[in-house]
Length: 126
Image (cartoon, rainbow, N blue to C red; front, side, top):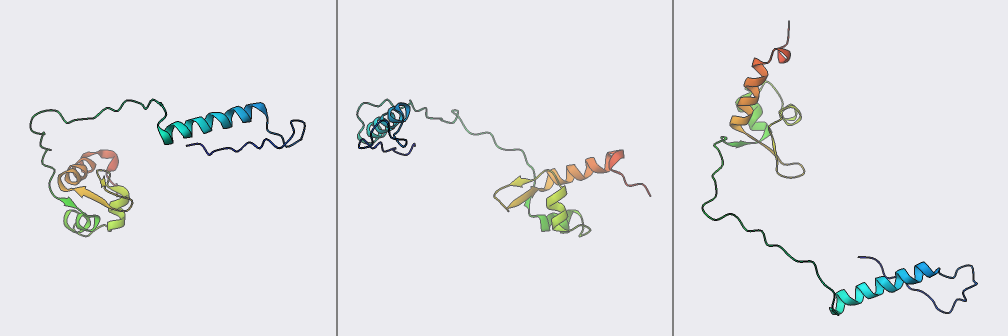
């Protein structure tokens, strides 16, 4: 919401700090909007649409396995060969639950590992 702009009427129009006509009009508009919203003096509010789920039972998600932390992925799926930090940075199928809360579905990670092994560009040549 816009801040209410006060227009002082005690300053003469020729004064260098006198508000312009546009500023006065803007201040009046802001005042009217605030008054209508506060008092409810005839302001038309936008229509509200209520979103409802489709009728019937919801579709069940596909089985993606357990929801694992980065430490669990590192220990169980990579057998401890990589650190949990490496898992968080490099394993792409992740579920971001919050700012620092990241989880991984077991089957998604297994599929990602299999796709990396079958891709020739991902193979490390010795």
